[in-house]
Image (cartoon, rainbow, N blue to C red; front, side, top):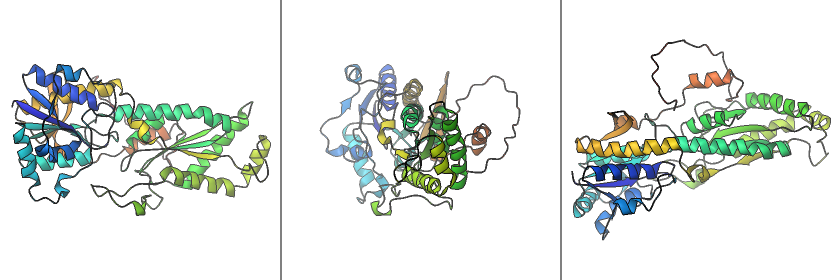
Length: 401
């Protein structure tokens, strides 16, 4: 093992540059050379046509910052198996041979990880560094902590405008199948209601919670000021369990339909119930807000921070994890271990999982949701009682994600 290629794939997020730097610094310490393969799997497929590659030597490493989100290597959403060229794997191997690359380090989520598994099965040595802001792999994934912190800050900051205008604010965030980011960021921002794909929303329950909490806050305020915040994952399910999708948008490279309108749909469901509730006009009159024909129900607004939650700076945790994952991936390759996903480094122990298992979807633990329901947060369902199980442990620290 003398030369290694590294690529990042899928959605951008925090911590990826730390993966690149961690891998490069470890490679340098072991006398290896690490090269960037730009533009993800598209760049890998087209490597044969490139004239040169960028080596991550000390001078090049000084030119980018591990704390910045996004990836110095660039991304694309390409599924190698879906390429029509029957010689696609031979083409990739020829490109690697051209530049004398012995193996690949790939940082990506479940879709990108499935491509990595496919490449490894076709004789291309790979190690996977888990990356997804959705936190839905079996391991912790770089980008998750950065995204949760950014969403939480946005939702928290929005309360100032919510209180100024007495608005219900609905913030839609990423999360197609699993609601980890909505769940954790909503808790951190002290959102009133958190809607995730794992729990189909009962809109009557959401509305009853909103009406009690929102109207009480404004009535009890000496200046009649209050807000109600909802964080909803894009993969929100209707009460019947169906997705909210844009049928006209087609599907992406991995066969996913484009999700559209979870935040807007949530606003519509709340507005419909506000208009139908005979107690709302009296509430508006009692608090000095009612203006006939103009301002008869509270405003409900959707906020969609979108790619802002992927951007900016990375959290300290993601930078640490990124360095460790990148460095650990190099060490795994030196040991001849491929087709695996690095999960964590604990002192001198480098832990890893077979990648086909690591990319299996992980959902929000509904027992974890239950403790927050017992504290009064709404998740769009009838909340049962939280019955704890007490267990003494030997002081072992594990991250909650």
